[in-house]
Image (tube, rainbow, N blue to C red):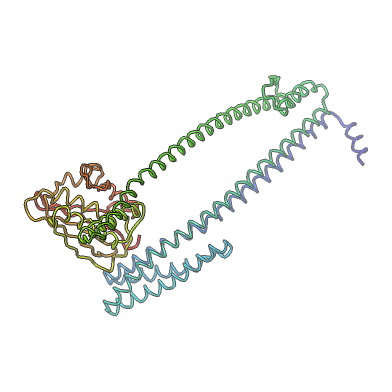
Length: 497
């Protein structure tokens, strides 16, 4: 069979051989392009399907927000339109929950979906009770249930965000797999096209032996490149035949490879410089850490010295001295242990108590200090060392040099979902310009920087740490009615950070 085909091929005319040599690569290239077209369209469809879950979760979050707002609007206006909006929003949200199906997304994602569904059922039940209580004029009940819906709404939004984020990460992984598959397909296509080119060259070589010399030159250049030598010259002609086209394309490809190699070398050099920079930064960080550890030696030594002094005073029967040193030791212990951690409001108040006691010993009881504390909020967590620096500022810059009796009043109370911590003095007051500079951070370093009694934590530091801890910008307010009318600092932190 093979011998028969070979004889017919040898007996065929040059025109027929040229026609066959043209038709075969065209058909093969067309088949490859059709295959690529179908494959790319299939992958585009799969990419569209990948992120449809994220779109559904976003729509579900919007439906939840519209449901909460509709209920709130009805509670405020009790209009028929608002009630209709609520029922429509409730149905949309139920439909969205029902359409959510992530069984094939993994155990963790499916568990998160089940949690959202369960919470949604409880939330919808609670919103229904709220609407029913409103329609029944049960004010106490609908207010209580409404506050619960607000908390559940926030929890649901957080859960939806977490699920959306987790699903997005999974989808991104699927997308990466698809992208890798597409690149593999491109490589296979290139190999197929390259194979078609070789077959075509071979056929042309059989048809026209007179073209062998340029082909030999091209093959020698290709061998040099395969051996790693890219500094080769390729002979090209101005003709329009197939060999001339292949020669020019090869030369262009070789130029592209040389440019690519140059880019890789530049990239390697940049990476080397970046790694060197990272090593320098790492060494500097270690140096800073060493200095930080060295800086802790003095506070620890002072703390141990105070403990020794307390024991000595106790042995000598000096009760007031013992109490004073004990408060000093507790004060420094808190500074050492809590400076990089958060603390409860109760711990912060206790530190202020000790600080005011120490000051009254120092200034013979000139500072009059009072507290008004809501005990229900004292376990709320806040950054450590936020109250004492403000009290220190009130003493040093508020009541230190006044001619009348100095007072500092500490008040802790709840306002809606926030806890407010107020420190008020009856001192010299503060100008609005100074207040604005403190709140904007321009006065950092001006407060408590010149006093030996300072612990080194200024108001700017307190504001910055509160902003980082709460994730909010408006964490402190400062009020002063004018000269000699005192100053009030109010810290605002959420009940649940």
